[in-house]
Image 1: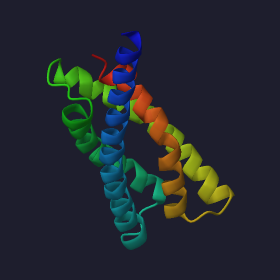
Image 2 (image 1 turned 120 degrees about the vertical axis):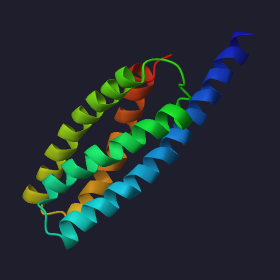
Image 3 (image 1 turned 180 degrees about the vertical axis):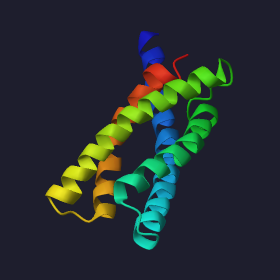
Length: 136
């Protein structure tokens, strides 16, 4: 019986991660579009563009992850939003530091750097949101 219970939890985690991956993919796409428009077309500095797209897209990500990924319908919305932004601020600080390192120091094109960093941050963000933001 323990095996079935643990296997069910494992399968649930896989589905939850898949949903997180889908929401994250959608948000990453929005982030890249906004980053390109702000930096590539409007000539904003790439770090300012990252800040703007982080604030805008994270609200969308919070809503989708709350409803679709973690299926949390109860609990304080504002507390969850605060926790979500706390995780995402720490993520933003790591992303900004890595963006600076890759773009200014190693001369990687800003969009390539952002895609690489986004992939790296996926596990950190998933575990942070699963274990803290949307903990049941």
